[in-house]
Length: 289
Image 1: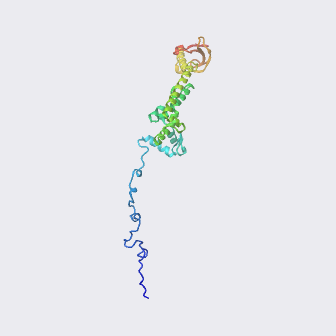
Image 2: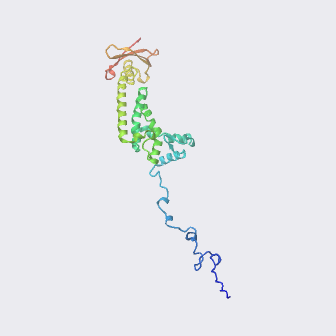
Image 3: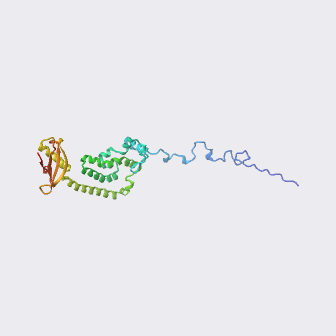
C-alpha cells in the first residue's frame, strides 16, 4: 500500500522565530500599543493638561501682608478650630498674642466686624458689647475704659473669625447656626439692643441721683473747689454713703470724707435732688469748720 505523504504542519507562532506575532505580520505587531510607545510620550487624550491639573488657586489672594502673616501663624497652629486654635502650643507666647488679639477690633468693636464683611457676627456682638460696657460703667469704670472692656470679645475673636470667613466662607459660628438666617438674626439682635438700652437707661437714671454716682462726685468736687478755693486736682472724696432722705421730698442726704482741704479730712454733708438738673442742685454744708 502506498502511504500518503505526510502533510507539513505550519509552525506555530512561538516556533517561528519566537516573536509571538502571527504569520505574515511584522515583528512587534502584536505588542500593546501603549507599551510600544516611547517613555514619556502621551498615551491619550486624558494626558492633556486641564484646569484641574494646573496650580492650586491662592486662597489668600487679595490679602494684605498683615493678614498673610496672621493666617500663616494660624495654619502653623493647625487652623482655627471653632473658636480657638487647634494647637496653640505650636506658637510662641508673642505669636499667640499676635493671633489672638486684634488691636483694631479693640478700638472699633462691632464696627470692625461690619467693615471686614462679617456683619452677621457683628450684629451678634452688638448687644453683648452693650451689656458688658454698661455693666463696667455702672461698676465704676470711666466711660472710655468701659468702652474698651466692651470691645474685648471682638478683639479676641476677630482674627479667628476672619480666618474662617476668608478660608471657608463662614458667616456664623456653628454653635448658633440658627442666627445665620437674616429673618432670625435681625429681630433677635435689634430686640436685644432695644431691651439692653431700655434696661440700662432705667438703671442709669437711678444711679444718676445716687450719692456715689460719678456725676454727683464730680459736681461735689467742683462745688468744694469754688467754696474753699482749693485746687480741684487735690480734692479726694472718699467713703461716700447715703445718710438718709433730704429735707425736700425726693432728695438724698449724703456724707463723705474730703481729703486735700485740711489735715483732719472734714466730714461733708451734701444733698442730691432726685429730679434735679445740673450740679447747682447739690447743696453743701460742712461739719466742724
